[in-house]
Amino acid sequence: MSLASVTADLAARAPDLPPIITDSPTSTVESAAAVLGVEPDQIAKTLGVKIGSGSNARTVLIVVAGTRRLDNRLTKDTFGGRPRFLSGEDVLALTSHPPGGVCPFGLATPLPVYCDESLRAFREVYPAAGAINASVRLSPERLADLTGNQWVNVTVPS
Image 1 (cartoon, rainbow, N blue to C red):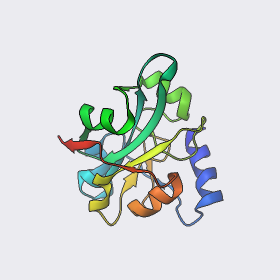
Image 2: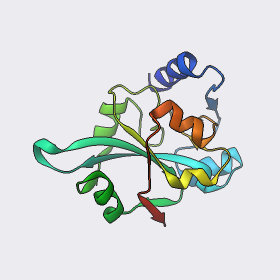
Image 3: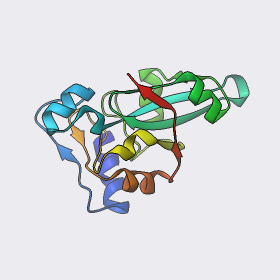
């Protein structure tokens, strides 16, 4: 279902961006980079994050360059609350995408999506496309256009 929801979303909003389906898994940054023949940081990984706690908690998706890691201080300063990664079960329930295939397209639940500045270093990036062997190729600017044009600086090198 997840690949189908991504395909339908992209067909409606960006028909020039068909998913790339591979015979090999692309569920990790390393495997995706090897299969697609690109630098690991060109793999745009989508992180499911809960910000804050209690009744003020909110869930967001943050798309970051492949080898970057979320910085707790930068994230707290940017979003106003302590970040916590969602469990795989929560990510699947909210997005309909399995871990390793999570992307900001075809979401089961509307969520705010933020693009990290680390993506701007590349002409093209490759987020997953709702399955562990699917991705899509697009520019960081197009990714931002399709996800709400919200840029943040919340990562540091691994």
